[in-house]
Image (cartoon, rainbow, N blue to C red):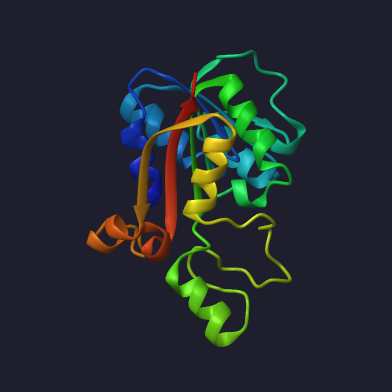
Length: 198
């Protein structure tokens, strides 16, 4: 399992209910089901990934996240997770609110556009960055709303979202003293657990 997914799995309580948006091949849900006894559903648009989920016994619905979560009642899940997808959504604010309507807590991960290598590529190479977290070129990337850690935290405050936990990791998916002191510069991936700020 990817290191960022291992961090997420530590945030999930055993025997809870989980909705994974853009669940891919179901690796996270499978791990959570096997190790923590969660009850999970995945939403996925790619038919090959849907087939992979079905083969693993993962409950999956083939749909586009952008279509919304109207099929789910409020507070249907303990957690709603979206990994490495928020930057590829047309209306991330709407999806965040839908995540918090459907789930008691939400977890998102995204590549930090404030990462030093991104800044270096823009300033010294004069081009859009291409790295482990952002592997596509500008003309074939699915990413349309890149943001930094500072951007996301500003949005959370504006939208009435309470950040419960944050983990930031470098290109090796490790925490270190640099990512703790200056996360917006040294963190390549950001992970957030949040809820409504009542």
